[in-house]
Length: 333
Image (cartoon, rainbow, N blue to C red):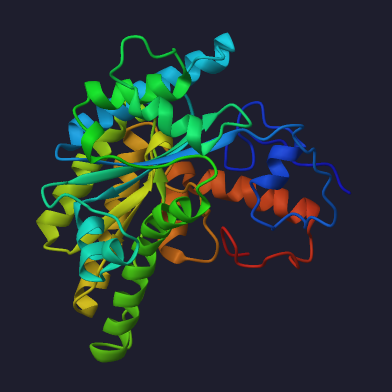
């Protein structure tokens, strides 16, 4: 392979990037994976899911912040009694409305308070071997001053302090059916949006398409990003739902189109989101990458500039001079 060109910036040349980072970040434009070696954990933690509704978004974000801090301390100190979470998902008020409209709360035996403006789905990690009986006992004794100190009880006490314990729906370890129901409610949201986009395309305008973003910011700036999403959607009069990975500061704002004009306006909103995310110190292209989508490729250019894109092309030409791997992904030839 020819020597890589000297780079000063760009998606392919972040500070401290090694060849593994370079390959992973290239979205298939520099090569393909042909074999993978996996390491299996000797003992898998038990998982407990909790669907927690809040009437106030700021309070929900404060609770997520506390969970993040607790998990960080637990891992750093290796505290066997600490509260550890592996994921926190979120659904905004429009998402909850979609679930109710489609009857998916009732279908899964879940009650969403009508006053809830946000719900978070928490994956709590507990010691391997935690039984459903023991979990229910610890939850039931949460207010008992003589109850043993455990990670699950500490988590429940956090819910009590937040004033939401009575509204929480918990799936204890081993209760696979209840866990699947909670996950189904979360997964129903993108399905509900996609169904409405497809219906609008079929009945209103064949040009209608999915219009969504996938952006990330540092968590301490996440509330500002949500406020910006709200204001921009409101200013444009767009119907939109926002969900995603709240613990990572990475969520997906999606337009629910009522006309092709909504699609055009939604694309403009996404570009505005990208500029704001960059200003907040985040990345306008996160979990799902860039691909061949021109609406996503534009924030990439905004982030790195023409010179950065050209440096990426130089790497591509050095490794794949015939441009055979994923042509058109990230940028054109």
